[in-house]
Image (cartoon, rainbow, N blue to C red; front, side, top):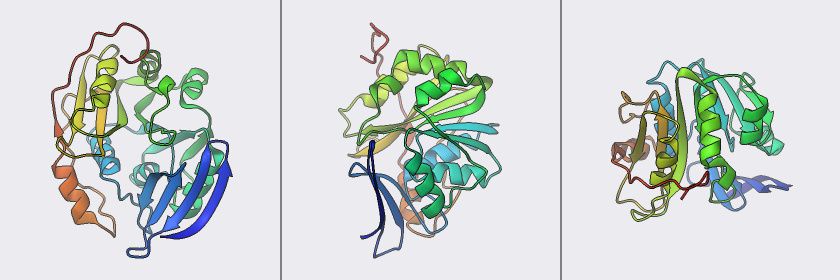
Length: 251
């Protein structure tokens, strides 16, 4: 990969690479890949296409994204005339997303911690997406019962929340614990996962999600579209483990 740009910030070093083989752009922060896109800003991550396809099955018009990275989900949603607000603690994320990943000016970018933003903003959204990572993990305060209670309070009556969860292997119950926590504030929760794959992403969701189907590929990138389509085909809604919640922090 060819290094295109770099920025050292209190939240980790952001580096933009261009791959030699395909010309795709890669956004890395703290050594972890946060986004990859073709030259039009369309994501090359199957989980982004999964969330995109799920949201487009709903009537959602106003969407809040907690966590920006390269901003590919915001770019794709804005091109479908959705009203997108993106929140990230790192202002450099927005600068790079606009410069290298075609994040449209119509996306309202707010520099803030996701929880603090929700506490200060009383607006309700049709969909709220959690995709905020520090390195390879979601900050603990963004996966607590208190946080999901706050998220639910900022959804419209027919709204839905979606969380990207990293899964190391089939014995990793991180997505089950996220869904378990959501179930305390949402009457309907579901888990979309690709069991059998290591180092994958699952989508936990709650709210107006009972009638959603496993999403197809709706926005074909210039690169690796067939691979993404096959990955999406492995994703299935599955039963989730139930845990006894003893505190406001995930068990």
